[in-house]
Length: 426
Image (cartoon, rainbow, N blue to C red):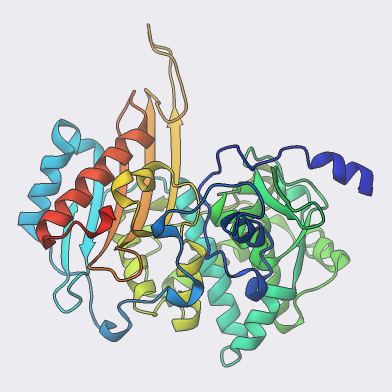
């Protein structure tokens, strides 16, 4: 693509337009090479237009902690019936349309677990991108088990070039243009070049299906070539063009399944089945994707303990899901404004013909799944409350984003009442 054509693609300025949920601490651009973080940092300094971050979104990288590392033997406790009944009361008449797990870690020596329908299997939608993230960090650890600097170098210096695997995707991702001191947002196009960290960030913060497919493609390449990765574009093409679809499918399933097993997670309770793009699915067949809130909770607990791959990897994964911009869906609750929120969500809805019903985003009348996982630390800098929520809802004909926003508010107020604190309202 010519320089002129590439310039023409940068047409959507994002200073005043609403952002999607964005992750990673904004001081991390030098360490990671995620360039859009510099745009966010400049906005906080008042050098470029942009919204100022809320109190809960201003943690620096060194303020993010794995808060259960000293309690790495803790496992999910038996269900606390009293707290569970309180949560079911919040859900009201629609309780059967929810699966929810809540793990209160505010007293790490005495965790409390509440659950309702926590073993019901759902489609994870974009929450499945957490599995791709895990697969990458496990693959890095397998190849460079005693060499964290080598892992850091690969993520920072390996460049990914978007190709046909990005098609098709409606999500837009942010770009920082330092020469013009401006942030822009657009869909990924073939030829877009950025480092591995940036594609990870786009996959998780902007929930880009195109970025997720490029990350997964390069996980397969990393596992195939090992220490020889990264390889040139010709070698990339040769692997995917000269390897049979059956062999590619087998390699994909191993790439997504083995890391779960290595981390004591159940792939029959939480897994991502394949690519997020149409072209990726066509070229590399996968399997079904599924999740339960209980196994998703297990995933988060392992991360907080530093046991998801290892402590370094767990820390990087937690940073990648730290919300530092506009909060959406469950995380959009005003009650969480002063809290640090580590978050991923995904939605999946379908509509059918119905008299008087108008199909809109997140309001399906046939299927209306909204999945969210959130680690809450309130207040952000010195938390008095620390809890994890994994929830999926299928409330038909209602805006599921607003449904979960309300749930987040009411659940947070319930947790405040249990702990006698209003800290997160600061």
